[in-house]
Image (cartoon, rainbow, N blue to C red; front, side, top):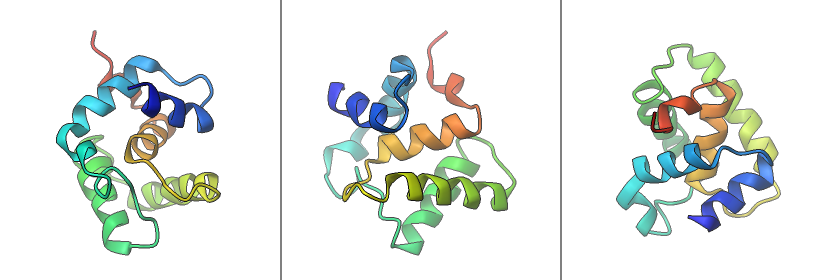
Length: 106
């Protein structure tokens, strides 16, 4: 968990630890495999999966232009990082749309 949190904190220094833990739990088994634990922004199908499966289905977002713009901002922010951890991408996307509370136990 600390590795995921440390990576998120590179981009969101005041990251909500409970929200990171909730995203890690949500992703579950996908994080066991290195390939599925990363997001490839150069693969259009991968970006579309993030958009459809996480942004639309999980976060309940409907404005695809806004989702694309947010993903573009996240990609730009993470550009220097060779590996873009899925937890970090999902955290930044949820944070952008003010949806982190979905991942925090009440």
